[in-house]
Length: 260
Length: 358
Ligand SMILES: Nc1ncnc2c1ncn2[C@@H]1O[C@H](COP(=O)(O)OP(=O)(O)O)[C@@H](O)[C@H]1O
Ligand SMILES: [Mg+2]
Image (cartoon, rainbow over all chains, first blue to last red; front, top):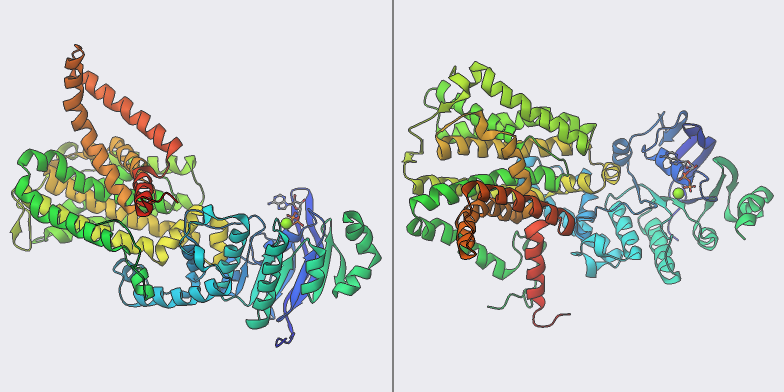
């Protein structure tokens, strides 16, 4: 591996989030280091997705702080997070159903495209040039994820596994520094899971992208992640290397024990 | 020639990103343009121009505007007529109040005014959607209906908002005969359709569609809903404003607010639903359909009635028209939400594979 795990890039401190009476997250702290793959595990409803939603500003926590590259935020908002280089995929695929695979991935380049609406309307100058430049970049991602054959297909027509891959492609098109993946392998067969694991490792290794990964498949988590956070009922009950977490009795009883 | 893209390999992204990537489509569109610009003026008579062709062109432009907002950006509007009215009356004011104001400039300024007004009335879309947004845009419709009827300044102190213009010319070309008016409207429509196509295949179009399809995901990618929605309102209202100006100036010549009433808003919405939401081509299909259907029924129904020995009155025909529209709207909303344009592209897809079904 060429990558080298660096300094803390993202640090969450004492984050609490509730919906009405439901405490989705209670006083959670953990950090993510540059270039690492950080997994979040826990039973259904533990607050994993909520955690990602706090990181990129879809949800606003009632308490706590998000420290991104040393900058302190009470809460994020999605636009700010995108500008700061955070991309994500969704647990329930959130692709743009009416658009082709290519267009879906091209939207990932949105923040990098600067031509104004008049240049676009007349397809002139910067607009035309950008459209070609970013298409070239998008084609690299398409090649990387091996989805050349479906680039013109409307995403609604694709099978589930491929949709997940397009979701990842769209996030990668942002060339993010931090990539949040919410159960990227849920509902996949073994073969698809293997492909997806390989892509995740390659992204991390070749592009140096820091990855926060939510995954249910313990085998996958143990294989790919550097450090693991364990949540249960919105509380953090474990944090450490895969081996440490596996040996933690609280984790075993709360999560591993329950599902095995 | 067989409709097929076999053997037409794209060697650059530029070639692949053309408006009509398939050779046969490029020939077809050239053929249609040549027919519209050269053959139609030679063949059509005054009735055809005034009753069908000119209304079709102007309403196509308006439908394009509605489609950009409703079909591409997913924001419902019942105020399309109001934005046509704003465009028409604003153009009128520029035209009569400013000395030597060229017609084209007045129309474009009317469009720009409508765009600005569209942004203001688009603000509720940042908070509400669906039915609530429909009601908010309906308020725009009622407000402008009232304003042009009652606020005398807007209509240069004419009574009940009826105004008229005359001596129209563009770059020294007098728009006198129906042929002139037709050619002028056609030229404007071609340019605007091209602009619409460029926007929808570019970054701004993708932003609109992203907001339409999945707004949370769009935001997470860095698309700002406010910019995307308000730009859609602005561009849509610009198209509608120019269409309104054309409708008033070159089609009617003299008009009053009723020309742009709620009926017009509904008519435009029906056009894009029947023609095809989110399709440039669909806007044309829808406009053609809605302009031609009443005329067709007017001719056909009495004739059919005679065949079976029933005489159908004019009132009967217009009732039948409303019922048929209603049935078609329901049909398209339920069976084919993408309208005639989708039926068309499905047919093309079949043709591309023909005679091998798989
Ligand atoms: N938007 C929301 N509104 C209300 N409750 C929510 C919302 N999102 C999550 N929750 C609640 O927060 C808790 C954690 O959910 P979630 O983060 O989706 O868990 P996980 O991803 O670990 O399965 C659950 O009890 C869930 O019902
Ligand atoms: Mg979840």
